Length: 171
Image (cartoon, rainbow, N blue to C red; front, side):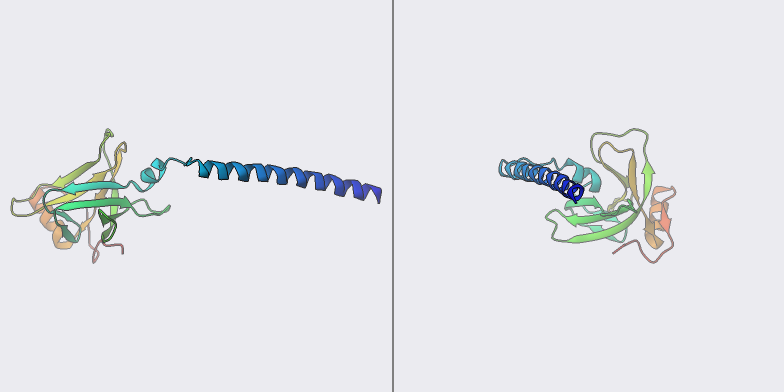
């Protein structure tokens, strides 16, 4: 019986120490929050690759033409598929498109966002073909389909990534 009490006493002491450490840790977290200490948010931007782009004239994306304006390009929040791009209005009030893309590789990363456009006749808006986030060698090539893909291939005289599916919108 005495052995059991000793065992229980040791267990209580360990629990008591754990509680005081928990209290100390909780106190430090509260103090940090009150002092305005925060974790940098750069990781979030790198994860979703949020990029604000302003176009001075209309541009084409798969399935539609975006009027001149400011837009937010981000990766859809998915661990399993990093090739879904969403395009929002600058104030997040409107989702314009959710698009499937394919990985595109460039030789050297740059410190700035890079957008590749397909060359088009002067009476048509430029079509975005690829978006690269700063510092990345892997970008997101937009997938055009049907008539759009054929027109882009004809206009640019080169192969355009295309899909035979009914459309590119993921959502």
